[in-house]
Length: 131
Image (cartoon, rainbow, N blue to C red; front, side, top):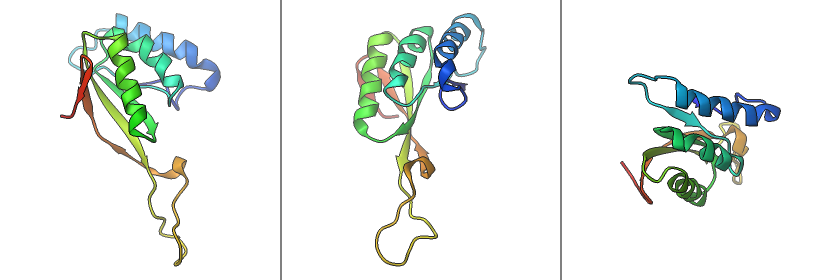
């Protein structure tokens, strides 16, 4: 997985995007899947523009909070690489009950501490479909 999100310092996002774009263009990955974890939206949209045309096979979308975000990524992928089938794997932020929750009233962990749950969809042309 080529990571553009948490592993990259905010000041180096543009340089990392170019590095990943070049790696996808120049390196022979053999039979390995070409996966990229983009930044959380809206910054991740610029990542898509850079990497989708380079035959990426799977895009991991971090910290997804709504179906609209997945639709936005799917639409951007179709614009950036209309001739490629690209799998999407949104990492959904789902609040989970804490074992330390008070006995009365609702209690959920902060979003950044919630568990991420993977699921994947394939974007074929302009119509996303589930596996």
